[in-house]
Length: 526
Image 1 (tube, rainbow, N blue to C red):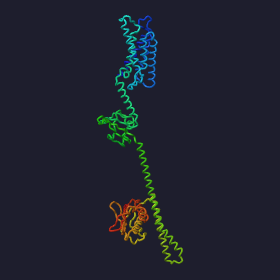
Image 2: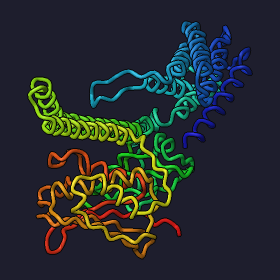
Image 3: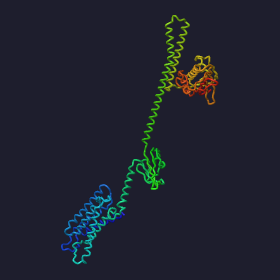
Image 4: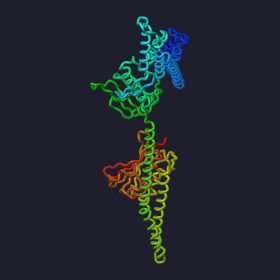
């Protein structure tokens, strides 16, 4: 309707322009002084102005120049019509009104009633058409009415041109002029405005929005949805979405195969009866939030590890302080007391007493040296600088050597095959056996039995068993830890040296009584 009406209005503008140009120097009124050409001249610019008013909008400065030129031509037509008011009042008034109407074709004045507005051109067009019709009727019926002359009339071409101009101006804006219907002017315009507003709102949202019908077919998506999903189709395929009423963190599959974390919601659009007639899916990109959460978690884990390391270091310091306070202080105190006694009473002491005191000083000195060596080895184990050079080691030879250097060797019973060998660092294995024997003699009871045997999985099992009361249940969790039971570092060092050689050490109660410390190592190839 709009396109056809504008086409007809443009044709009317061309027709009026041609009529004006053809009748610029003619007159068909039989007046003594003749008809001046002023009203006919006014038709030409008015027709051009109407033609410019119906040209489709192109946007920008072009539209402003076009509307300005149309208004200028229409006002020129009105001015030309006004110059003939004293000579041809009917033609002049009609031309003046028509020119002003075309000039103000899109001008509206607000009206307080119902909040609507009034177009200025409507009453002007009505007045111009009325004057043209009256003058035309007066012109047609003047010969049949005695005493009436053509003074108030106008030429047929001029009247036809004014009526054509009026009709063209009405058709130029069919949705705003007298031809408009209530729906066109009110409801349709309001709905169109609301639709435009809704579309602009949807496209300007920062959240990705997809609108679906009741069968989950896509109706519309906004710009952010296409950016987030990477889909550029006119009707994109909806990715997997949460069920209606659900939502939360979701992984959105993009068109390029990647995934992006989003906060997804799926809301139903109910109809009057409450049944869903459509759905709105909303996605919010939370990739940056997830990255921050991961970074924060990693930082928290790093702090936790640092706290654990700090707690372990603090526990080590406390244990070491306790050991130095008790175990190390005892031999030092004994050495100091015995040395003071020797110095003070050397001349009065018999030789056998001097030898006994010197022997005790030597024993405590060796004990102190052993503690210092254990501490040095402990520091190396904590820093991970202990490495094992594994070679085939005869178990019987190592156990006999370690047993001979251990106080209470007469309490040890050894049952090991001479050909049985383990793949281990010889020095490490000697320290392990020595610490296990010392622990059994100190905290167990005689006899101490040491045995070894092949296992079916390519390993060899070394067992040190005493006949004491066993290990209390409350000490079992930390049996191979540092400074257990105030006995120093023996079992802790033994565990770490065995593990450095690819083996393991464990405890189990003996039958009918006693404790068994079991060391598993790889069997050496024959």
